[in-house]
Image 1 (cartoon, one colour):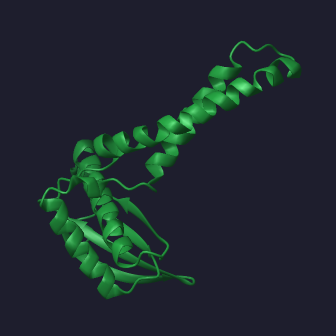
Image 2 (tube, rainbow, N blue to C red):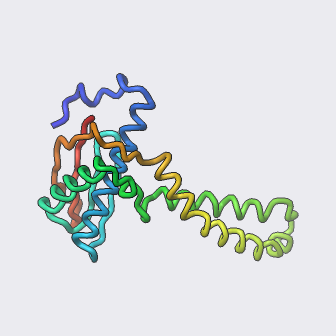
Length: 177
């Protein structure tokens, strides 16, 4: 159980806070990779924060425990690619940002009339499509360099709690280090 003193974030620098979230995010992704290999047709999701991460999906506690242990060991062994997940929200954010920027660029200087804007619609669609092609490698780069950190040497699991979210199974994984 987490004590109130361990939840006192005022004693942690912003960089330490961010690094801890990045490590938890990497372990969440690695765990989802391992679980997906074990249960290939099971829908799962995760969410990370400073204190740990959530795993949501139709998996049992033993599978979660074993997958986390394997994921942590593999990250510590240098399998950094496990920190990147193709369905991460970072990829979605990259696609949304690039698509919005492409559309904005396409409509810049198009005039005030609706017809002027409609004439730019093919350009906006083309640029948005191109932005989706660029979003995948950008999302991967962002995960590798900003939103995850595969440095898991000091990361430890302190608790794994099953939690029911309506009909969905969920597990709260608490970490320290």
